[in-house]
Image 1 (cartoon, one colour):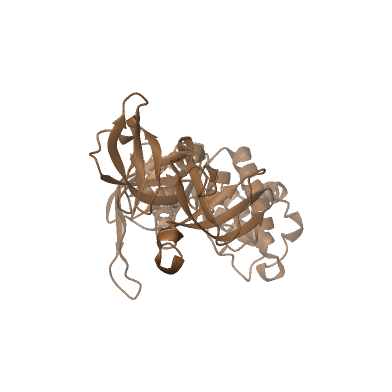
Image 2 (cartoon, rainbow, N blue to C red; image 1 turned 135 degrees about the horizontal axis):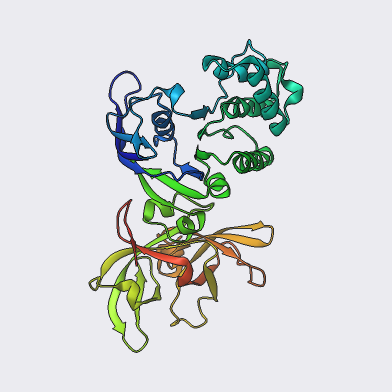
Length: 384
């Protein structure tokens, strides 16, 4: 567990000020926790603090509720796999794997047994006599992982181990890591900038931003109920659409509904519970995933029906769905019928829905079971 951890780099060429700003994070025993964040968010710094390679400016790092700030790295029961493998180029794979065990004064027979066990588990028996320069990238990655596994750690730390791997091999790497976790049952903390990787591997996901953990939850929880705007736009390809507007307080009590009125034009019915105690005209953002929409038909049909509207900017066919990029607003009211000035949104149309043409107006409704309201600001909290 990390409690109120602060770490800053305020000196030298690479000074960045506060990287971690009172960060709290609890990692459960035996879980696979993925930590996702942009470059420079402090992901590697956090791993180094857990491993004992760095020390926080303030706060505490605890294992089983006992502080380990005074415990050297070699005695923490932690193994760290670096992004760049960090293999000694003049040593064979076997010698690289043996090195951390020799530091711990493990006997030769035990070292040999552990190396053979890890090599068999990862399918690298054939490269044990090779130096890193005679291995493929995937083989080097598996040797680096095996070097960590021979230590039989209670906590395995992975620093973007698949960052430089192509898509097909990355998915194979996911299978390897899941299998390793099932076999060992140890606690894994895996940092990545790839949100798909985080969701594919993690029992839980922690989203890091602004120097703190913005949300921790299962992949489903973080995807469907992001804690704030930052989290909403941290996961997904495409990210969650965000449309600014306001809540209209004119509530029809018979239906228990209020209205979200988009700044770019159009409105949608929302539940009275969503509106909560917000005053009439309160600014909010409506967040929704690309597939959480229903096309409402052409503009001229049913003009009074609540919907958002815009103009199609681009259309791409993606297998069983069509991705539409549109800009909200009404081109008919723009000067010289120019492109409307509202925000861009990405919409996914399913089978059976008519594919619009570029430049064509489009109207759509948002399915509210797949949407959220947010307060204003970069870290505006989810409402309701």
